Length: 227
Length: 144
View (tube, chains in turn cyan, green):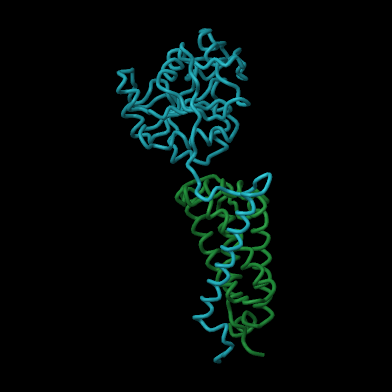
């Protein structure tokens, strides 16, 4: 039963496997080098960078105004998130103006990060769907009033649901716990990838909102609307 | 049982399994090599690897698959290729299983963007079949 074909003995079997892996590594490095050098380049950066967000440019009034019209239609949408009908036009023309002032996706690489001043303006005008990406527990302990709760751990990768999320034609603003918390950014990328074009990320998060002395709600909040 | 063992360890059975596994690996590797950026995004979806390492993995994994696949198909150091294939398959099962358990509704990325298969039970079952074939591909065929 002993088979003395040398290259198949246990030790050199592992050795043989390592040779194959090493060959693969060498080929991969060579291929990527070729890719980085070629025109057009098809190589990957050796060290992947975490995603950086462009920031929404604000003018003196505190709102982006690049003159490019928003793609969101402003008729027939409700500013009231909990309104299941969603068929009322914006009563507040300021909301419509704010939404229209956002750069179009052709010009800006959404999701964009926004400062609290911009969030506050959208909040005051009811011009955005605000999404809390934290756990239900954190959400109920205190959240931005009117924000819906989409805990990232639950909704990550649930593209079908995210696609049907009804924003009422408004941009989405995601936030989480500020600091190094990445879930608002991750959720924003997921929302962007299923087709929501205007997604904004408030990196300061709930702590910055609360520290600003702004109103907060506790307990359960509005339910997400789906189309 | 003895008949089954005779069948499984027959040199033709082992060889066929090596070739099948090898072809699957080559088919899996080529689309990923052809579009490394998309594959890197699919790796990112799993959230299993530190972000700085994701591109290295996306670069290296398909070439290791390709080399192992070629060794199996061509019968050059085929058992070593089967070892690599088995390790790869075991890793994929863990990754797909973990993503599935976390409820991630993501592309498997198993064949890069060439297939639209999602992470789920069907994919786990498919990988289990491949793992079984790898097991046979690993065998030292009985003489005669």
